[in-house]
Amino acid sequence: MVKIEDYPLSRVPQDKRVSFLSVAIIHLGMLTALDQFMLGAVLGHRMSLEDAFIAITAGSLIFAVATLGLGFAGMHEGVSGSLLARWCGFGRIGSVFVGLVIALCLLGWFGIQNAIFARSLNFALQGKLGFILSATITGACLTILVAFGFRALRFTARIAVPMFIMLVAFISFTTLSGINTAEIITRQPAGEPLALSDGITLVVGGVILASLVTPDLTRYSRNKKQVFNITLLTIIVSQYIVNGLAILIGKTLGTADVVTMMAQTAGGIGLLVVVFSTLRVNDINLYSSSLGITNAVEGIFGKKLKYSTTTLFIGTVGTLLSVLGILERFADFLSLMGVVIPPIISVMMVDYYILRNHRAVLNHSRESGGLPESTPVIGWLAIISCAVGSIAGVMITAGVPTFNSLAIAGTLYYLLSKLK
Image (cartoon, rainbow, N blue to C red):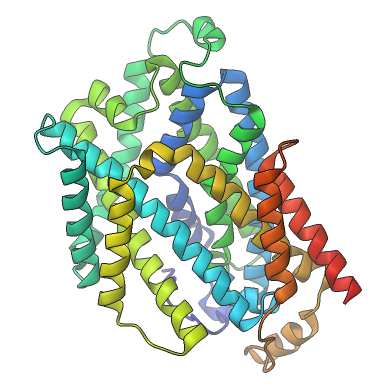
């Protein structure tokens, strides 16, 4: 059984590695969720069918390269992504920066998922509460449950995934049965048109956080073949099945609102599944974000924050994001993710596979099953390269923003390292 919290500051021993299926189920679960369905609905609502599937394919290729690159490294070294970052250009304090970026991204996801939960609750009550009050109630309840260690929410994880898969199958059958395929193919976007380059960035933004944390899982894998098959399976199911069906449904119904989709096609059952799905995802989002920020503060300032207090604070901020309308900026949030996280991955891969600055000490320490005794304090070149790459991804209008940020950060880091 894979436990992500095990071996947080050490290598996973070879005799603790597990089967392909044990890792694949968890990795697949990260992306076979409501998030991908929402993304597909946006693409179907704002793009032609051809462009939407081109965006999926191009985004999946970038995701595959990033996931395989970090996944292989995590398997080879047996360490988590944030720990690997220490010897991939960022150093000890720089790796805290990576963890903080992940935590802030998860906080944004919490706000979005809570907004969906609140909209479902308000819809079910026929608007009697109003969205703001609904979002406040749902955010506060979930925050309190997670902060004080109420583990009954784990029950939702066991039923949410199969319920969600069955609901997607039902909605797909109900919505797409008997439709005119040729008419759907030629139908123009119902929403504000989205450029192909921006669509690719949205696809990458929806999955790239999973790439960054892939070493957390593949450190339990036994060989490269397992890592490759895990990545391939995740792409096929999350992108071409869940995301692809959502594109067709969004285009058929003419909406990107998943709550409306579920209510129109599955009624109260659909809304119930949405609630369970958001509970399942947000439990993890809030828990991981709280741990990330707690560890970041301790790593930088040497001060230990109380977990429950930190969770209450973060949950309050996430709930405020919901109230302020982060769900309405869903596409913008994915675009931001698509230019902020790829530079981090690019720098780590350049350092590990091309510059190989710390491969000798990693190899030497791996023989004894430990970690290198010497750890760089902070990798300013990595942090600067990531900042420049992210800014370039936002500012440069030509090409694909996510690819621009990735390529510029990696190239700049390579050149600065060589000059140094």
